[in-house]
Amino acid sequence: MLEKNRATSEQQRRDQPTPLIAIASVIMSMSLIAIGNGLMFAYIPVRLGVEGIDPIWAGLIVTGLSAGGLAGCILTGPLVRRVGHARAFMVLSALIALSNAAIGAGPHPLLWIAARALYGFSICGLFIVAQSWLNDAVANAIRGRVMAVFYVAYVAGLGVGYATLALVDIKTADGPLIGIVFTALSILPVGLTRLAQPPAPQAATIALGRAWRISPVGVAGMLAVGGLSMIISGFAPIHATAKGYSQADVALLLSAMPVGTLILQIPLGWISDRTDRRYVLAAAATLALIASVLAIGLDGGALAVLVVIYLVWDGAAESIYSLSSAHAADRADKEDLLALSSSLLFAWSLAGFIVPGVVTALSVVYGTQTFIYVGIVIAALFCLFVLWRILTARAVPAATTGSFTPMSAQAPLPVELAFAADGEPPRREDD
Image (cartoon, rainbow, N blue to C red; front, side, top):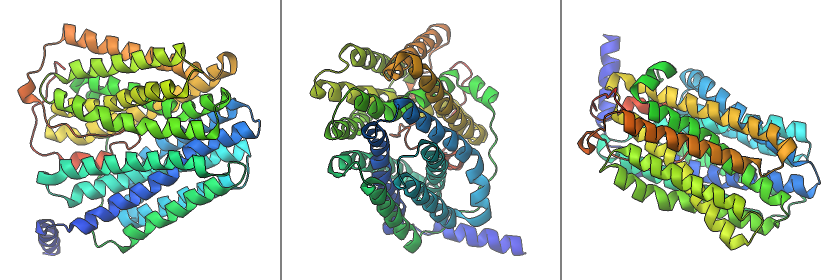
């Protein structure tokens, strides 16, 4: 009887329309966090450069961040099941503030590696909490639009944070303090929200073998973009600082990169909804390859030219994330979506950990521009793989594809989103 009453109460909760102001509270919180996060991404390599610390330490810090993110993918589920979404959000936000405080203590590389690992764990967890919370709260009819607003708001926040670097005294702790302020502000909308909390999430199963059988291109895309996203966002400011670009130049370069994500994803997604997504994935990989080759050829040149190149490079790489997610979902049965989504996230996180580590090790010998060469290799291999799949596997008619939603690899798809799949797209083993 008690279980029946709970089920009835849960159904009544779901039947009630969610106030838009409640939905906006979670989006606003993540946008505020993004501003602080973008600032810290830019602040750390520039501060290390000003202090004369070897760029290899900045690379190790990126690797530490990725390792923390991998742990966040695994441990956030148990945290949410224990304390719920709202408390988990506040705990993870507090850990980000603590991470920024450690950065503000001064340029101590070992401490900064630990601090950014803590940040990586926390930000990955925050996305799992925030996106699954929104996904549970909104109806299927508006879910795509709400998630698109979420991604755009976060990416825009990153851009604002990057640009803020130009206003900061790099030799002081102003940057971390500003990051702490925005993180603290982000807790307020969630702390005051009336948005109902979802039920405790189920445990997600990581099944890379099954995910590969459903969509080899989808898994390969996540592996590719996991590496590309982390090395572009992590090593671009390191390399620019090492090449002698000013603090304001680095801020401009980084703040322009999210613009590429916003510009390229919508047209590429629109095209992918009307054709085999693999053609569009191959085009995005080719665009990333061309941009990375130009980044090498024009390295150290005019800032305006580099801004355009990195804008295209980052936008094309980020588009691979959303296109791969949509492509894999097109081929999964509804009962496969939970394991598929968690497996894709794990693949993204694994590559995001391994590739920066490889780049850091190679940079000791070949210099800070190593990340561009690694980016060329990743984009070329992924493009060739997609083309091979197109040639050897039967094409999927455009009518079977689902609806594209803009996403960003800086805002990873959490496993709980699998519960909200609308409809049952037919699974395709022919990819």
